[in-house]
Image (cartoon, helix red, strand yellow):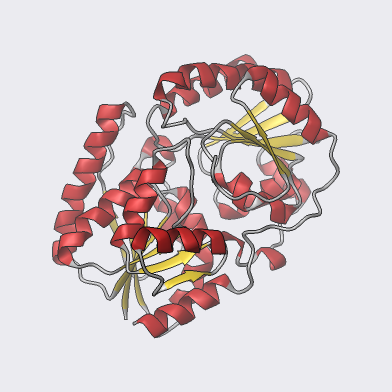
Length: 367
């Protein structure tokens, strides 16, 4: 069966990996990677090169992002992505196409496939993130898909509510956690030496804009900068850079300014890759920011998370998450509290066994 894999960023590609590795070895599947979005953006690390290293028989690339990140540019990028994929779907036919998550460019690629009758399998549908317009894009993708793989039973019920029926809707757990029980981090000394991390406790930090509160992002970014400047006096900070969201550059500018002012207290990473990112999560003391990985994955590493603002509001959380307002003092207070905790020993509501195997089994039955 001919399978397409839509991947638009470093983030979704890392989540896909356990599934891709199994499908690559399964003769039932003739798999083709369809890379677009920030994979082809030099300002976001040109991560297409990392996809190519993994040696897939066929990799298509579709370039459609406009470099600016104001509202008009994001809307134009959406439209351009639809146009590019109108051509792509005209010339490429698949038995099933996987799509993942909630990015605007992922939504555009999927919407372009509707008139062509493309069958989509959506991973991570049914979730709620009230502080990001991705919430809308995610539900758009769900409505266009025929096969659904959700991370929890709660999200499966949300998909059923959206669709009005339950067929071909499956709660399988978070795919990124598929191999978490057997995960072996990079040797500590090797990891610290490669990235020039000082031998002290560090926090892993990721901030994205709140795309439902565009008028507040300048204020939020400054609050983030002030808080991180104070926190950096007590611990080293590794920051993974924002995605190509509306007003993401507002946060980038503040982060880059911090690096210039305190060069020895910050490490900025454009693209860690899954192994390095999970190794960083293994060795970090805590996570700080508003990224989904803090909600979905950190609990499996025994880490507490300071989740800032509303971007992830509405997403089901494990007991390792400390929520705080997007204010300088609130962030510093929550981080100080989290720093005093020992390792988190509770469960992760997103973890289920054999996620990739179960997805493959369901896909074979579906096809």
